[in-house]
Length: 47
Image (tube, rainbow, N blue to C red; front, side, top):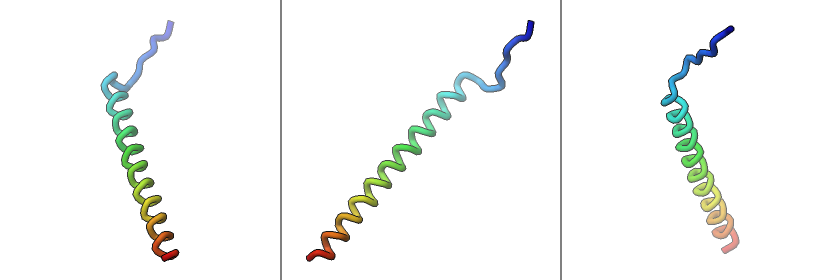
């Protein structure tokens, strides 16, 4: 019978998930800042 062995440690998965969550949060913040700046630019053109 073959034994199932993994090369990753249990703590590594949580660290990777944390990095993905941080990256997605930073991406959302950057996207929101871009959207606000585009709205401000369009409003300033209309004035």
